[in-house]
Image (tube, rainbow, N blue to C red):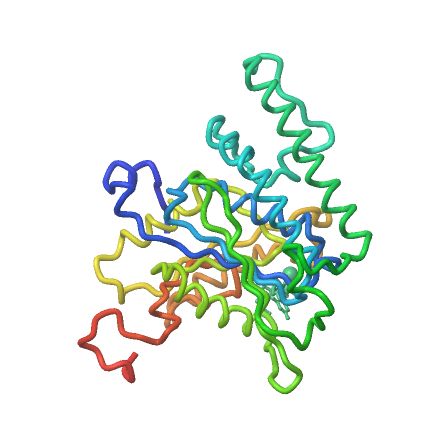
Length: 307
Ligand SMILES: O=c1ccn([C@@H]2O[C@H](COP(=O)(O)OP(=O)(O)O[C@H]3O[C@H](CO)[C@@H](O)[C@H](O)[C@H]3O)[C@@H](O)[C@H]2O)c(=O)[nH]1
Ligand SMILES: [Mn+2]
């Protein structure tokens, strides 16, 4: 479906936009380096959408103080990064892609921009160093610190840890979750995390839409939420759509993509699937209606058994 955010903004007032709960899942801060996860988080905190309608939940299946520490430091940086992105309409809002080693502002950019760009690059460099250094040393158990909950914790057998991280009025709410684990109940990997995220967000913010993103992805278009809303507002009845999902593109692929990693064949496959009951959910990059996940009818007239 072709979507036109500019036309949507003429037709729909921002206050009519629905709230969205954003879920990012991570399973290990070393195998899935925290700095990558934090870039995912930053790209989503900075999207073009009313920030008071967004809440970002980070699920940490490693129950790692490093992930919580990285998130707290990232929110401090986000207080500078998000206004910078919005002021200058930055297109790539994941700093590790925006600040490539050879990138510099253009000569005809304003002096103000050049100055702020430099500051932001240094601030991101500091964040990067803090996280990389923290990853190299064990967290000491300090019962008075914010990390006391992680003292002597076994990642596969521990009670739930939930932390609300304070930002400011220009940032979405941010919540860290390490779900309860015990050896008797299988945790079901990402699916288990998604179930917990759905339940916890249902109690805390209960947005009608939920976006899920893996920890190594980022929004490469700041208008991605507005594109999704073009589809949401296209349908008059809630029950006419279940989810809006975006394609994935991969970085650093092999020349000519000999193994088909870029999934270009999907574009053809999808056209075929459309005629046999419609598109399937591909696992991430997807806005779901909350009620679809709950298995509830959007209007109470339909018996849920018929859905
Ligand atoms: O116990 C676990 C294991 C994984 N994950 C997260 O799940 C996501 C996907 O895991 P990954 O190992 O990266 O799987 P991929 O094969 O790369 O993922 C693709 O395929 C999966 C389905 O097999 C989908 O769920 C993913 O969204 C899709 O990107 C990542 O964010 C992980 O951190 C958890 O939260 N808990
Ligand atoms: Mn993956």
